[in-house]
Image 1: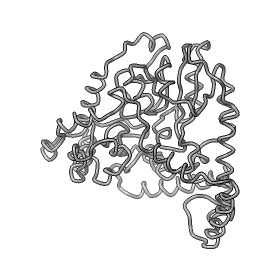
Image 2: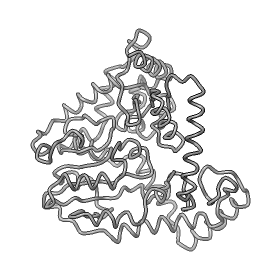
Image 3: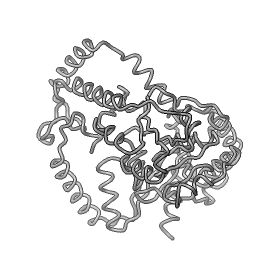
Length: 408
């Protein structure tokens, strides 16, 4: 519901009423139909999807969703809310069509971080370019925001985001909509900067890069630790108190291209800073420096953990993602102690490549042709890995894998 709350008008009582309205609607609908399973095109990270998933869980109806890998231009099929990955069914209909191992090797060789090259992700480059183009004076931004707000307000166009407290009756944008959003974004950023501390990089420390919110990568992929508060509290309990934890905000959280103002309270940083020996780091320092200097990097599902693994460092995941079992990467739920993590050996990048290759062959599902324009795909030479983009094969793999799982 945070995803829809544009300017703080979506109050708890209205959220509660809408939740029960959707729950009763979906419960009645699913009960009245003979539903064998539920399949979603993405992890349930929208209010309606989450409620529908919950209803199916109550009624013991299997749920499946397709998720894209953040490392390779492939999809994979997950079961249940927390995303237990399913091995792809290799039936005669799909056998032999998947996967060209030479192309897979080519894709693995194209992953910069496996060669020790730390590159800024394509999506972040796009955000930084957008922010540079939209770096206007405060006065000009206010004038532009008012004019655009007046225009949109006059159109009374229905919108999926909540702009009014009684949104079912009237949900037109506020006249000062853009100014309110810009002020909230500025307030959020200033709140973070006011809590920033100078950090000592010459001692043992743990790095915890924050993830952009609201986003699927924390809810639902974060599992039981979808709340960043809970993940950091658990991490502080896990790591000896004398070892500091350095927290760094995600660039996207303050980008004008996105809606990070919906994902955090300005008070969030004050709460995090109140944890013992936990510090907020300068956002302009590079993550590479923290990852290389930390005794390990921790995150809900962030690719910073994969980067740490490839740079010969240890990583700790609280949630579930395509590289959860990658060498040098460990699941918080499966560790008994800090000492156990520290005693684990470091694996080579060849081990990581072997893991990714086996994962792709066992769990990878072909991406559709529309995925060629995605930020993940743009990191590769699309022509060199064209066997990974096949709409017909993707449909066959998904249907056969689900039917096979339902028969078990």
